[in-house]
Image (cartoon, rainbow, N blue to C red; front, side, top):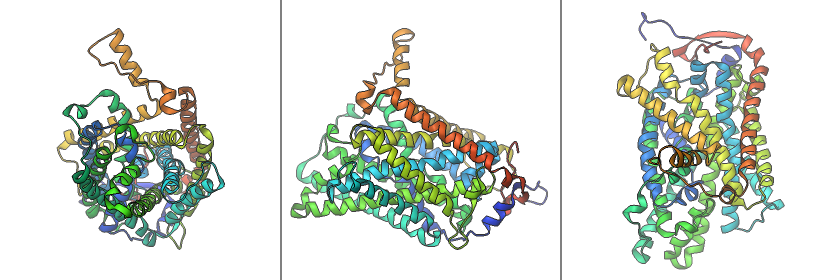
Amino acid sequence: MSSSEPLEVERTTAMAVAEKAKLHKSLRRFDMLFFTVCALVGLDTLGQVSSYGAETFTWLIFIAVFFLLPYALAMAELGTAFTQEGGPYEWMKMSWGRLTAGIGAVLYWVTNPFWVGGSLAFIATEAWSSNISQIGTGTVGDYVFKLIFIWFSITVAIVSLRRGKWIPNVGAIIRIAVLAFFSITVLIYAIEHGVHGYGAGDFKPTTAIFLGLVPLLLFNYVGFELQNGAAEEMENPQRDVPVTVIQSGIITVLAYGIPIFGILAVLPTSQISGIGGFLDAVHTTFSVYGGAQNFLTDVMALGFIFALVTSGAVWMIGSDRIQAVAAYDGAFAGFFGVFNSKLGTPVRVNVLSGVVSTIFMVAAEQFSTGSNAATFTVVLYLATSTTLISYLLIFPTVIKLRSSHPHVHRPYVVPGGKTGLWLSGGLTFFWMLLGSWVAVFPSTIETALTWIHNNIWSAIPAVQYGDFKEIWGLSQARFEVFTLGTLGLVVAFAIVGYVIGSPVRRRQVELPLETGGLEPAAGD
């Protein structure tokens, strides 16, 4: 920034200044790359996505081009221009004000306790039970296993980032190794036994599959911004963020595309379940190893479980920091804004995450009278609804901040001028809006399209959703009560936290934006 340009300042809090002094720079480019790969490449939804058949590939590529690419460009600009701890919260605060940013931060953060305590814990338990040692559903052993899974993730987040970062790093390496070994085995299996063939028509896109896949694929493809939750703990974010975003994006598309092909190649679509799809395919293909089949399948199951626990841990590391930053900035209860002086981590938020995750796990166990698969599907969609909604507040900030803060130095900008900027911000917002609606109100778009087809314009394709209870394992009314009730409680929780944070907000200080400060909150 030249001396003739206006100095951008931030109205932050005295607590923020004190807590930021406890941070330690420890994330190098290597760490940031594996941190982001660990966040983006999850194994928990491989079976669920693959159950849609060959058409999955069509939409996987389509969304990679029209969502993942503009998303990566937007996060590269934001992540290099605004390098404050708690990145997404700060971007929302500068754009929409503290209250809105506080709600957005809670929606972003609470996704992860829901996810870890719900879908990840359930999938890990099923993987262990099916491959290592039987665990009965609802037994003491079932609860103990899930509690260990949850609190191991929390412990990784509590440990100082200098040491704790190696768990996600190893997790990223292990998930790549698992997927690579599986892909090689699929090739050997195909040579020996052949694979399920697909005609060109199997890849033809349809509206029904599109609407079913959108929330899942979007959920798989988010995470570029997570590393900026620890932006002031990076050695050089302005140099490293764009590189790690691009590299991790390429790895992510390959890491999803290749194993999904492998699952579909060896299993009929009717035999692919949301929980066991990937490991079922592993067991089938590993028959090429003869007597070593069961042993190698168990090894892959252990790698699969470790990948799941590190997925939860890395999201806890990033999202807990974002929530703690909101707290020390006065947008949430100040009690949770304290970073441990020795570890440099937000231990109070970490523990809160563990408690919420545990409560949600117990609630998810009790909520559905169906099988684990039915519970898994419901909690997964609840998790996607909260995270996708939070992005509705994050993605437009790339447009808002380019306009409201033009003097901030941007080492990287979305290419294409204003057109490229609006395409990037607009496309990502559109996808999140669509994904959020489909996740929270499944079947409503299909019903509307069918009504329009029958009553207004027959050129619009009619889409049959099917019987809701048969698909979800519970009635639509119960589904909506559980989902909307939970979302309402989350927003109320955020507002209460904002009110409690009032004493922190009253102790304000101003800092230069580009020397480690933040930015005045719109409307404050």
